[in-house]
Image (cartoon, rainbow, N blue to C red; front, side, top):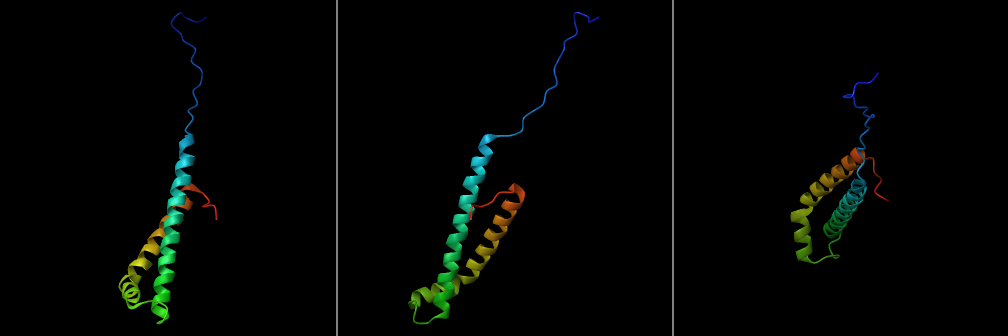
Length: 95
């Protein structure tokens, strides 16, 4: 027999899913992919300017020579960030 002070509490199963996380993942993936595309274009322009003398002006070749190392570093960092994001989130970037 139940006492008057006994309360029957059902099992509680928490729901850890948050619908806005999917949207944040999409936005973050677009930002990372967009930044990677911009850095890749900069890398192609700098490499072409340094490789072909008549392709670009002296100013562009000077800019490319001074900044190509930083562009390589940015590409490496963004590539690592994209890889870590895909690994942690298990998200495909839509490509």
